Length: 217
Image (cartoon, rainbow, N blue to C red; front, side):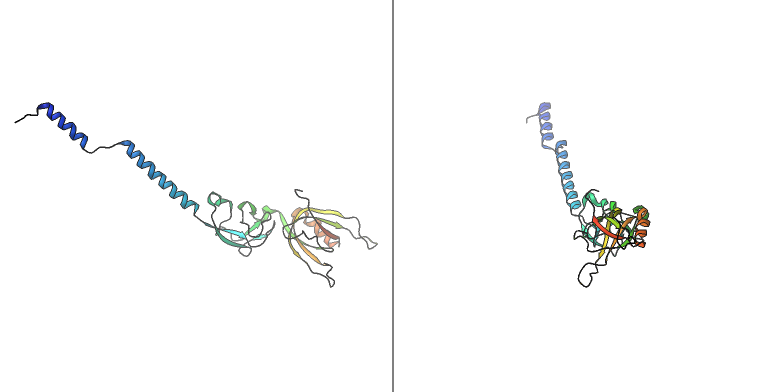
């Protein structure tokens, strides 16, 4: 009968330790990195696929024009980090909003392009324009308003600029019998500081004409 002795027992214990359960920290770190990577990919895919309901202009809106349910429609869009830049469905105040700059038909309604009436500082004024309008003048066009005062002779004085850089809100053309373009009514978004000037010219029966403003003017 052979006695393994202390040396034999030491060899047996070492073999048992090698064959038993073991734990490598590097293996755990590798698993953690894989899990974090999978979660990150899932989050990116979910975020990019998320849509929100926002308002778009149902027709061209100009500065000073109301922007309420009647003028807007809703769409579902993916905006990502730009969500806060546009007016979301359900965020309209009870009295609606007022547009502070031109927003084209079908354009998403930017938060930066709306405000209240006191912040806008403009009012709608309707003028009757002599003769036909230039073809490029339509809703949203920025124009200069020229007027010529009537003289006792029945003619008109030299034209002068009544107000510069105002926005056309609507154009109503009522052609005469020969299609001469007489009676063109144009609603303008006029700064409140100039409203009295425009109304005075209308009351004095000035000859009013609209000229597209120079870009950047």
